Image 1 (cartoon, rainbow, N blue to C red):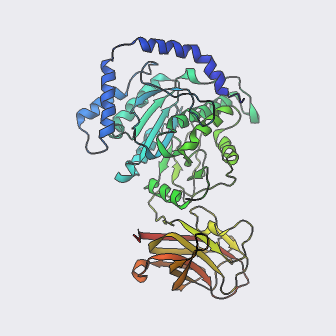
Image 2: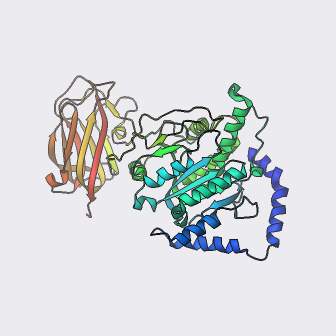
Amino acid sequence: MVTLPYAFLHMRHNLKYFDKMRCLRKRSAVSFLGVLVICLLFMNLYIEDGYVLEGDKQLIRETATHQLNPERYAHTYKDLSNFSGSINISYRYLAGTPLPRKRYLTIGLSSVKRKKGNYLLETIKSIFEQSSYEELKEITVVVQLADFDSGWCEGMVQDISQKFAHHIIAGRLIVIHVPEEFYPILDGLKRNYNDPEDRVKFRSKQNVDYAFLLNFCANLSDYYVMLEDDVRCSKNFLTTVKKVITSREGSYWVTLEFSKLGYIGKLYHSHDLPRLAHFLLMFYQEMPCDWLLIHFRGLLAQKEVIRFKPSLFQHMGYYSSYKGAENKLKDDDFEEESFDIPDNPPANLHTNMNVFENYEASKAYSSIDEYFWGKPPSTGDFYGIVFEKPIKISKIKVVTGTEDRQNDILRHGALEVGEKIVGSKIGRKCTTYLRLGEFKNGNFEMTDVEHKVLFDINCMRILVTKSQKEWLIIRSISIWTSQTSSQ
């Protein structure tokens, strides 16, 4: 039997919890405020967008901001015996309520009172402003106000509700809080890494904050991304995330990273969130959360970092939430403006070239920063792509070589597309190919492909037309589709 730190927490507050439950059962009448909250829930169910009347905004401001009363709007999860179950925590809804319909992505933020600066409102604003009308329909933003200062929490809820009333009504924004009584012991913890006592307390509480947030979000959507409360987003980041996830279909992953900084832009399957929440609670006093995440990923058999470039999220704060210390870290891979992300539809990849170590064919077709690397190719060698479904292609771009290995380019090669597929699922191939053009200086790029190729494309291949002494790196293969064939 595994004993969790949370078990001690649960025993410590068990009596208090049941006393409160007895008080709740004695309440036989629904208060006027409760009726207003029920009305708000129905509005969340049926108002997806459209304009918001001034009266509606006033209603949100009045009902979504209330005292951190332990008897109001408590939402309790059942504690299960295994790591796939939720943690027994009562959450206070400070603004908004979850919709019954699952969204595609939940964006989680945990925020505490800072000695200097406050970037939470700007972060929420960036999330919504950088998303299109269609993207907004697929996201839920959950903000956890994790500070024990109730006055600060009430003030923040009022600011959030006034500035983002429309998103609260539409069910896109939820603000929650977990009372201090549910936290484990935060004083007198082990001082690992010679950290001062207040630093240990800060990072240990942060682990618990994240654990409670992950636990709450586990059933809200298919995927979950963690941000910090001082982050700027790139334009249409959700569309990019969806393309990356689609490109990873059929491959195993635990964490996809869309920023190289801290706990920013880390994406998970929602079904992994309960396990991650338990994991953070088990080791909450051992090390910072970003270190624990590396161990979690490795324990679930994802050994390598899978990080997408350019980064979609940028740290914008100048002062840390820890003691107001300066923190001017920036992600130099971040691009704020919209960029042209390839579709790279699902496909089987293969080559007859001599592959070096683990730089296999799939790495050239990936949306992350990795590549295919093979020993010197000979005339007739190829890199082949067989699409799962026939497609129409609008643009193709292939880059060989890297900045570090500029000689490992394809010196003589051609790009071809094929049709009339034959063979079994494993050995599928095309019988007819059309040559689109030659590689120049190791690269190939062509637009308006759908106007030059009249058939639905089943295959694409890079063909070596002359042997070379240098090794070959295929850094990236990017394909943009115009439509999927109805064939």
